[in-house]
Structures are given as C-alpha cells and as structure tokens.
Image (cartoon, helix red, strand yellow):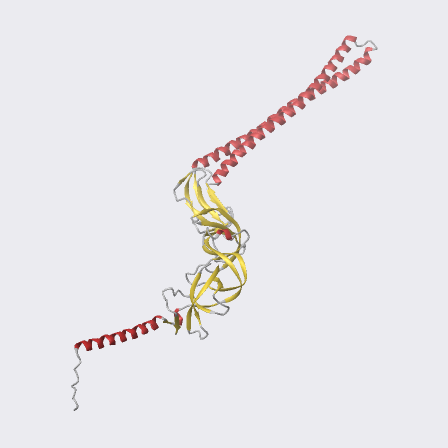
Length: 415
C-alpha cells in the first residue's frame, strides 16, 4: 500500500540561506567587474602627450637662468658739490658720446672761474709790461754803449794825431799819455758795457721765463676751474643706454657722488646662475645657448665665479657682437650650457617630473597606437628638453609623456 507524502513548506531559515548565497554571488560578480574596470582606463588622445624614442648624437647640458648685462659700463659722478638743476634724460634712454644727462649748478664755481680768468689776464698783461721794461732797459744800455764807443773812437783818433805831433815837439808827452790813458779806460768801459748788456739779456730771459711759468700755472688753475664748471654737465662717455639715474631734481649732491650709470647696448654678456650640484660640469669655453624668449644666441663660457651664493654658481658668458633685436641689457634669459655630447644615444622628450639618472614607469603604446601598457625605463642625463634612455626602450617605441602618476592601471585605451 502506497503512502502519500505531503511536501514540506520552505521554512524561514532556508529562505535566508538562499538570500546569502545570492548576495555572495552578486558581490563576487561585482568584484570581478571592478577589477576589470581598475585594470583599464580610457583617455582621449587630445589630452595626452606622446613622444617617440629617437637615436643619435645629443648634447648633455646644464640649465641655468640669469640676465644680460652690458659688458662696458661707465659710472658718472660729480666732481664738485652742486645742486641738480635739470634732468634731461631718464633711465632707458639711448645716449651717444657727449649726451647731457643731468645739468648741475654751483654759483661758487662760476665765481671761481671768473676770478681765475681775471688773474690769468693780469699775469699775461704783466708779461707784456715786463717785455716793454726789458726793451727799454736794453735801449738805455745800448745807448750808453754807443756813447762809450764814440768816446773811445774819438780818443783813439786824438791819440793817433798826438803821436805824430809828439815827435815834432808840438804836443807835450804828458798830454799824449793822458790821451792814451783815456783811450784804455774807454776800451775797458766798452768791454764792461758789453758784458752788462749780455748779462742783462740773460736776466731778461729768465724774468720772462718766470713770468711765463706763472701764466702757465694760472692757466692750469683756469683749466681746473673750467673743467669743474664743465663737469656740472653730466655727459655720457660712449654710445649706450642710461641704465640708472641716482639723483632727483633739486637734490644737493656731494663731490664724488653717483649720478648715473651708462651701459653698452650691443656689447653684452650674460651672467647665468646654475645649480651648485651641476656647476662642476661647467668649464671654460663650453658652448652656451642663451634664450631671450624670442631668439637663441650662441655664446661661450668665459668665467666661473668661485663663490657659491644661495646654492648657485654664477657663470659669465661672452656673446657675439651681432645680436638680435630681442637682446637688451637687464633682460632675463634662460641658458643651456653644453657640457658634453653623447654619440648615438637613445633619447626621448623629457616626461613631466622625470629627473636624470632615475627609473620611472611610462605607458608604452602598442603597434595599434590605441592601447598603452606600463613599462619601466631607466633614464640617463638630461639634454635640454630631452633625456637619454639607458634601458627599457628601443628606437621607435612610443610612450605617453604626460603626467599619469595618479593612474595605477595596467593599460590605457586611447580614444
């Protein structure tokens, strides 16, 4: 006899087990889906930078920054105490040799020049008067000499005549001897007069020289006064630009005080600061590329400052004589100092936040250029906007060089 069994109704506990099992299955499916979504990320091609690995000779460089400076400078100062009367040019103005920048004023110097001029005129007049006096004295002496010469000649004739009459007894011997004595005296006086005349000429010459020396000294005083007065006009000594003006209208300035600074416009140098850690790579005569934001100028290292300031070393760079219009004094510039050249090296555009001699993970594009996978690269030296690759890449490989440090996915799909 068959026994009919009545099916049991599901209990509450059985239903709870089914709910738990279902929840576990759903959670497992969600975990798989989340894992797949974390392993892949989609990016738009326009939002990323892609660079291709290249191979060739590349310059290893040291980067720096600095300013262009005038190689030729002139500091203009005052020679005397004065007051600023007029300012004709202001900083930034182009100047040429002799351009008046500032006009100073000092009434005392004007009076000093006038006094020196008057004294000079008086000394010159004294020279002329001295020459006239000497001429008069010479005329007097020459007249005296002429009289003595005439008296000597008369006495000489008398003595000759008496000598002929002496033998006939017409003239006494006493008279003849007196005539001889007078002749000898006149002759001696003529000799003395000639010596006096010669000595008088030497005295006159020395007196003239002394007076000329006084005039020369006074001319020096006059020139000094004139120079001090002329120096009240502050002028540029060469063609250039007014870089600094240190005075104001109406200001009182002291002797030796700075008034202005003139610098050359085309004769420029670059003063570049480089990191203390990279300074040892820089040597004299290395090639330097100066960027003015508009043009590149090729220069050469001429001096390395031995002093370290603020963890930087100053490098002086000489520049060519022919410079572009964008190069001007006091301009901020960037510089790349070529320290060495690597032959046949692998390199790529430097990714963001990548330092030299480091390792970093980049996303490498596959052959389709639509999918990128993580790849570890070992980098070498920086070369401007490029960086060399030691290992991890080959020629022609393409990498995303944008900053993707926030992405930790295995691959990126590029749309």
